[in-house]
Image (cartoon, rainbow, N blue to C red; front, side, top):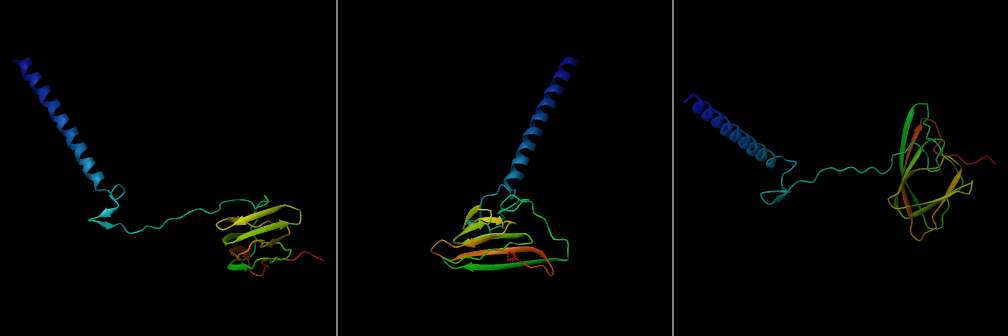
Length: 164
């Protein structure tokens, strides 16, 4: 009789454990089903509100030509501007004594360094302009529009022409 009581208690414990595990599993599944991360894309037929998204366009430690980026040491000043270059127009030879991050909004821009290297950038391209003297030219049929972000310093020029 003692053996039977022991056996009955072991069976009861096993059944209780199974019920606990099953209950915990159902509870976890229920909680996860209600989780916003796993929720359906609609609530009562209504679409979920849009969320902010971010896309890295450029992450680099060098200019387009491989020269390491060096930040100015003076009082920081950031300048942001949009530049439009009509078809056939050349920017003239210049360089940037401060880092210049460029994003092509429209068109296609060819940048030629005085070293002979050339780079072609299209809509959606982002790059840090070359530290070498260079010129940009719009060889296409539509205007080039670009967003330029200069990481400069107060009093520093955004670009300079080569000495004559």
